[in-house]
Image (tube, rainbow, N blue to C red):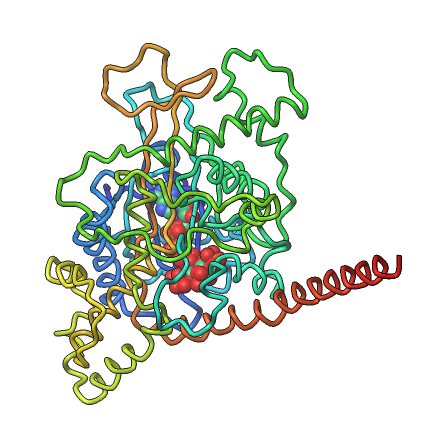
Length: 491
Ligand SMILES: O=P(O)(O)O[C@@H]1[C@@H](OP(=O)(O)O)[C@H](OP(=O)(O)O)[C@H](O)[C@H](OP(=O)(O)O)[C@H]1OP(=O)(O)O
Ligand SMILES: Nc1ncnc2c1ncn2[C@@H]1O[C@H](COP(=O)(O)OP(=O)(O)OP(=O)(O)O)[C@@H](O)[C@H]1O
C-alpha cells in the first residue's frame, strides 16, 4: 500500500459489525478494516497498533493452525495518513446504518488492517470483468452444550441461537423469529442444510449477506430493513445459474434460482478443499451432545411425522464447517462451568497483577499460546494454570462461534479444469470457488462476566415465555383430549 498516495475517493463503504468498519478499494481487491469505539472511549495509538497486531498474530499462530491456511487471511497492519482517514470517515458517514453509529471509527491512530477483499477474491485466472458472486454466512454456535456443569435443563435441548432469537425479537433487534437453526447447517445432512440455508434466505438478520461483484445485493442492516425480496434476488442470480437464459421469469423461475443457489452453497460447504498442512486441526473432539435442537422447525416437523431424528453429523473432516465446529467445541465446560474458573484467574490477578503479562491474557498470541490450547483435559486440579487454559480455550471457542464464512463463486467455462482450482457444478453452470473465514478477532478476557449474565438472560427469557406458552398449549390440548374422552364415555 503506497501510503503517501492514499486518496479517499478510491475507497467506498463496504460494511461494518459491532467492533470494526470495512472500506473497499474501487479497483483493487483489497479492503481496509478499521476499529470502532464508543465515543469518549478512545485508546492510544500504541494500544490500537498492539490490538491490530494481536489480531494478525492470532490469525497466523492459532486460527490458521486450527482451520487451515487456505481458509484464513490474516492481512497486515498498515499505517495511513491521518488526513486520508479523516476524509474517508466523513465520506462514508452517510452510508453507515443508524444502528451502528453508536460507535465511531478510529480516526486518531492512523492504523488499520489491510486484507484481501474476500467478496471479490479471485478464485480462477479469469479476466477482470468476470462476474463474481459471494455469500457470507455467520453460522453461530453449531452444538448443544454437553458439559455436566450446565444447570438449566433447557440448554441440553434447545440451542443458544434458537433461544436467543426470542430475546432479540422481544428487544426489537429483529422483527421476527428465524427458522434457521445452526445445528441444521452443521448437520452435514443435505436436506437439513438446504432447510437451514433457505431459512437464512427468508430471514437473513446478520447471518447472511450476498454480494455481486463486491456490492451488497441481499441482507438486512437492522429490524427496520425492508422485507427480503426473493424475486429481486433471483433477478440478480439468474445469469449466474441459468447463463443461457432458458428460464422465463416469475415465481417458478425464482424458486428454481434459489434452489440452485442453496444446492451450490451446500456442496461448497461440504467440500474439503483445504490443502493446508497435515498438522492442522489437532483437536479431534468427537461429536458430543444432542444432534438436534428441539426448537428447529425441521426437527419439530420430523417429530410430528413420527420420524426418527436424523443421523449424527456427517460433515466431512476437511470442510470448514467441521473445523469451525471443532474449535467451537473448545468450550468444553460451557459458560456455567467456565465462570468459576474465570473467577479463580481474577482472584489470582488481583493478588499478582504483574502476572497478567506472563499469563498471556492480552497476548502475545504466539506458538506457546497455541500449544496450551491443545490440552483438552477437564479434570480440575484446582490450579490457576488449569483455570487459565480453560479460559483461553473458551475465548477461542467464542471467536469461532461468532466468525463468518465467505464463499466466492465465479462462473467458469465448461472445459476449464486445468488450474486445479475447486469447481462446483450446478444444473446449468459451473463455478470456481473459494471459501474463507473472517472476523477471527480473539474475544476479550473481560467479556466473560457479560457472557455469563447474557447466558442466564437468554435461557430465563426462553423458559419463561416460550416454554410457558408451549405448556399452556399442551395443557389445552390435554384438556381437549380429556373432554373428548369424556364425550366418548358418555356415548
Ligand atoms: O453474544 P451473541 O451471540 O449475541 O454475539 C454477538 C453478536 O450478535 P449476534 O447474536 O450474532 O447478532 C454481535 O453481532 P452484531 O453486533 O449483533 O451484528 C457481535 O458479533 C458480538 O461480538 P463482539 O462483541 O463485537 O466481539 C457478538 O458477541 P460475542 O458473544 O461473540 O462476544
Ligand atoms: N476481508 C474482507 N473482505 C470483504 N469483506 C469483508 C472483509 N472483512 C470484513 N468484511 C465485511 O465487513 C463486515 C464487518 O466486518 P467484521 O465482521 O469483521 O466486523 P466486526 O465488527 O468485527 O463484526 P462483529 O459484529 O461480529 O464483531 C463483514 O460482515 C463483511 O461483510
